[in-house]
Image 1 (tube, rainbow, N blue to C red):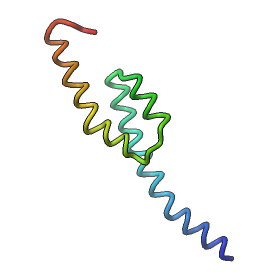
Image 2: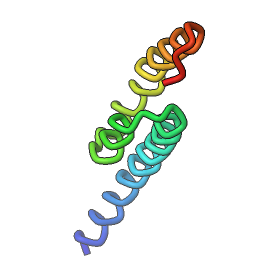
Image 3: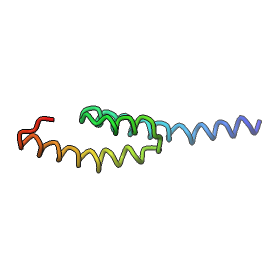
Length: 79
């Protein structure tokens, strides 16, 4: 009987973490794919950090890459 209660409590605590992680992972993977950032896409796909790496990518690293890409296009480089 106590196993059933422990399992139910475990699922109740674990499911919000899974949903949290999947939401951030999906957004970060989408942004990395749209930016053409293969290394970030692979890292985000493989490494599971409960959303920490994904949040950092979305709010810190993707903005740095985006600003660099804009400057290179303005100078005539399309690569």
